[in-house]
Image 1: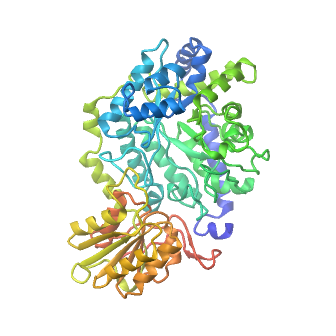
Image 2: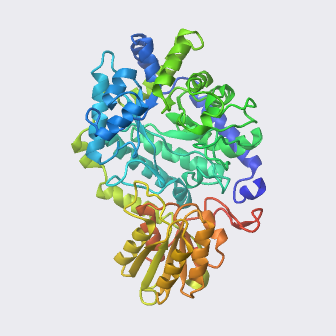
Length: 606
């Protein structure tokens, strides 16, 4: 399995040597205090820490979810959710009761309705904290990876996700996407982004990373991660490389289980470490931990989030990283299988963590840390070291000077015409043409004018205006085709398949959106092929789908079902732009996974 995964990548010996050189450079650059934290700055920040109560110090370590569109007047349903899960009514009450150091925004928590609302929520949270005695501004964070993980939707500018950018292969695109995304986040009052994903996706069956990764070549991923870090942080939003020590080779989703990575230490250094080394060398502000077990790095059986050998021994000491370490969500099953919710935050701090993200019960976690200090398991000096790193980060992104944003700044920055044009240009460089038998593509309006669009309709991220079938059909219509959308879902029934086959008869072409191809989708596509109508398929998530459909005449990879990527794919299908993307991962044969069907770098032109 490892041999096939490395196809198209630099040899392990070369990767290991390059990684060691990068690590040495990073350790030398980061052995002293970060450049943004001069001794005079640290003296000022330590003075702030010295005035904090123990309870305030404990609060600074937590980054917490909260329901509602407003800091002081959320909807009643959100008040009820806050009371049930957190024991407070509003974000303002959360800040006052627990003195948290940060808040994380989610779409499902109703934090991100529209740009002006997000800005007002951010201002309200900052005001609630600064009105308190010794109040400090908060780091406001979200997961704006783009692609399939996107919390702030339109009218903000949405970019292709990591694997799509990996297919484009241009560090300038990764950097520009990061810069523009950060400028828009900053205008909304969001100053810490949990991106980029630094995992190397060497396992096609990975259920949680996949297209969130830039690819399967460690050195290529490292280059893209470093570029995006510079883009985000150049616009003064803290970037976060995740998920250390590397979540790319698992078949278990750490949200629901406890993954085990069986890489040897040499394999880890070769496959998983390079992007994190590159992020550190690029001056990464924060690194997120993974709720995974890596026995070769720590044989204790603890998840990396709770592992002193991994977080302190490797990340801090071997890699020389002295920035903020944030856990992945403490509500995920991967960190809760071995210890109770009262032990997890304490063990994370003992391992070397600074920020404790989104515990299932803040009251349990907050009191557990407080109790650990009072009973001597943790020292106040240990808390102070983490708080200093957090305050350095707050100072670096400008929060200690002015944490507030304005509607004028939102209107001037978010979703501008120039930003949207940049997203379209970048997306056009990512679409990858995998198969084009007998030159079916590009489709001609003369011979393929009447198109049926069928396929998967996964739950929409914030970057979509509708199911993929609707977006694809609308884009085709705008280019002069006559397209009809028929959403058949990710698991079409036999009746749905028959409906699609009937609708395909008499058409000039059928466009099928595949999504993590399951048996029922395969049945649909094969039934459409049997009609004799030309079939074009587009993978709207993982590009590995193509291996299971050898009869399709034309196959493209879009890497996501967000509007910007689907519309770019349609422009390629219609011949308005040429396909330029190259596979950043190998695609193995479905009948023999030890054999590579399409190597890294594969991508057809016309």
